[in-house]
Structures are given as C-alpha cells and as structure tokens.
Image (cartoon, rainbow, N blue to C red; front, top):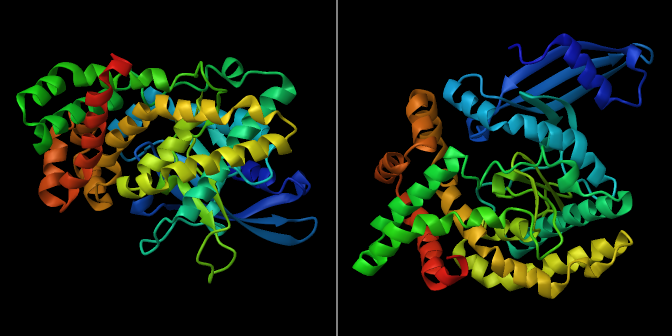
Length: 415
C-alpha cells in the first residue's frame, strides 16, 4: 500500500521523537493495515501504521503506532464527495494551525497529536494505546456525560484564553478554514437529509391528520433550514471553537486500570466539522445524539449546570473573567439553539443507527447508489433498511416526532 513514502515515514518518526537527533533516526520496518469494518467512516478510510525505528547514535529501537485517516481510495463516489467538500483540507488545517494554539491553555489532553498531514491524509496519534471506546456491554452513565462536558468546557475556555491572551479573533483569523461543512445549503448530504425528514414525518402515524400533513408538506422544510443560522457565530453569547461532532464513536475514554468501572478522562477525535460558534451546540449535540430521549430528559438540567460550572472554573484558572459567559445568557442560548440539536439528531440517527454490516455492504457493493442515497434521495435507502433491520423504523422516527412537535408548537420563533 502506497499511502506514504519512506521519506514521509522518516519525517513522522522525527516529529514523534522530537527530543532525539533527527539525523540519527532510521526506519527499520513499517506495517500498514486497514482499519476494522466498524471503524469505517462516511468521510474517509482508516488505517493503522506501525513503525520500527532505531536511533543509531544511542543504538536504541522504538516501536511507534499511529492512526491514519485517508481520503477514500476504494470508493470513487465517496472520494469525490470528500474532495468536493474539502473535509481533509479543513481538518488538516485545524490540526496544524488551531488546536496546538488552544492546547497551550489547557491542563488536559484535548485531542490526539497530529504528526503529519496532507490534504488527503492525516497521521495521528493512536489513542487506542491508552484510551478506548465503551464496549457494547457498557452503558453511558451521568458520570460519562459529565466527563465529556468537562472536557468540552476546557476546549471552549482554552479557545477564549487564546483569543484574550493573544488579542485575536479565531473566526476572523481562520474564516477560510472554519467553514460550515454540515448544516449548509450547498451541502447535498444536508439538503437530502432535510427531504428525508419530511418524507419520514409524512409517514409517521402521529401526523396523518390533514392539518399535520399540510404543515409537513407546506412549511416543514423551510423551517428546518432556519437551523443554518444557528450554527453561524452567535450574536448573543461569546463564541468558541466547537468540536460539533461529539457522538459516541468520536469519544474515547481513559481508565486508571483494567478493573476500573468508570473512566478518569476522555479525548475527542474528528474535527472535520469544527466551527467557531455558540458553545451550546457542543453541549446540546452530546445530549441529543448520545443520550436517549428518556435519559436526556432526566439529566438535561444537571448536565447544563455541570458544564457551566466547569466553564466558570476553567475561565477563572486561566485568569479570565468568568462572566464572559453568564449563566443566564448560557441557558437562554441553549433554548435558542435547541432547533439545531433536534435537527442534527434527526439527520444523523438514520446513519448512526444503521447496522455497520448493512451500511458497509451497501457502500462496497453499490457505491454509486449509496452516493445517490446520501446526496440525492434517501427515501429508498430508509425503506430498504426498515425491511431488514428490526427496530430501525421506530428508532429513526423518535427524533422526527420530537422535532416536528417542537416546530409545530414553536413555529413563530422561526417563521
């Protein structure tokens, strides 16, 4: 596999072992393996890289491990979509130019180290050496949510500290990097998803009255597009660098030892849709995407309070005024941006809850049709999966009902 050259391997090793004399390092062997199927992403392919390196001056060997994200090589439609949207160009720039500046103000590890990047590839620290996803038999508890919210609050506070200490505005300095790749009218995945929401809403048993059907057919789509305004920099709260994609596969946990039941730290990966915007989007995204609706309702207020207290604490530790974001403004902003969270939940649930075996098979066996499903019309895909995956229809209709009910009750807020 020719993802990387021998010269690039040397450069990666030199950056990893930066404390050593560069000229003394040689690469003895390399092994590049495709990631497992459950690691397959919608915006790339994943690999694991191992390098055996020797410091010829000290006669000492090092075994280095990395996680690689690459533009799709096996699926041409998927590759074209990634190139069209510029997702690797954006994430590479975020890792190179933005995250290291923010990390300087944090006390914990906020993201995996990036050792090398091109516009088609990222060579990252392999977090799985010290962190892991939750296993299938492990459930999220309130402690897990609080740990992630604490992590996000430090990311947000550190981005404010960078601006305050170096007298800059992240958005103005990196406007060309921090583009909206998700909820944007030019993103065919997003507009196709909006049409899928209308399609599912029209089928929902709760909306078969003439009044509900008229609302769905005449007004729902346009109301959904109002969320695009909510992911722009806010005019009512201090904006921060937001991760914007904190769902369970992008959260890895660190445990003290193998016998530990609860993690003592976490780290987040994937910064493809990072944005300078309201911090409430990260908070609400986590609670709407990872937690079930029932759990979210139970923990919602406590999680908002926990996030805000952590944010205050980090701002004070960094020597900043904790009232840069007041509790009142934060809570009001959560209400304002709720539509964006509901919409993201409804957009992503059909893909994240689809069995990996089904989505991977469709993508590999029918790449052109799968691209059509994602970027033109999703209705046939949804019906196909409903037929073969038990419980799928009920699962993806849950966010539809909450979203439509919310808009029918609050239409005047967005009309």
